[in-house]
Image 1 (spheres, rainbow over the protein chains, first blue to last red):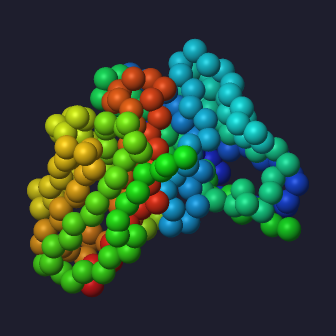
Image 2: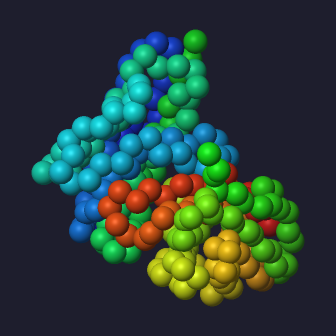
Image 3: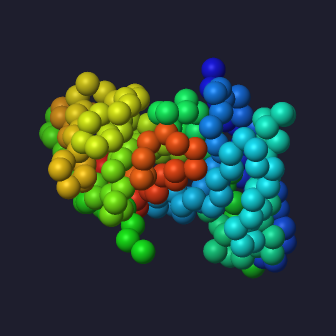
Length: 113
Length: 115
């Protein structure tokens, strides 16, 4: 069964600290992996997208890694800001031509002053 | 930059009523996707359209139908609404379906409340 699991479910950190979110997936055939940030009641916003051959990709203070052998990905947030408080969703695309997405249940991050 | 536009942003309907949600993709995007996100749940894929033709179908109930028009905007029609249909409905658009790296850009969503 195609599945995307994320951990932790929720996380509280202090402003300025770093954190790492985890994503494990069992999706086949794998096309790409994306990390989205979703504010409450808003649409998901793409942070990074990585294909099979990419190990790491950065977008400002966000750095995603991908290990296609172990089927694991991480999203590292550096020097967190209050505006980073949101749900972070790992999404795996599969099926090649059909661009189907499997969403993880997300990690709810709260950054406190 | 122009984003995906959804209307209305909020909608309240009673059971057994009908609702129509609209999605306007980013200019030059020819593919539209619809997702349903229940409270505390991850988005579930409903249906997608490419060049005005249905390209893929997910967990869309038979009471729902959708289409993509000549200007590439899409409408999701929901009939015989049930309480369980209360959710956030997202529309996403992309340039072309299926190719790795073609990003789906999400709209802000329509919050449907069925009472």
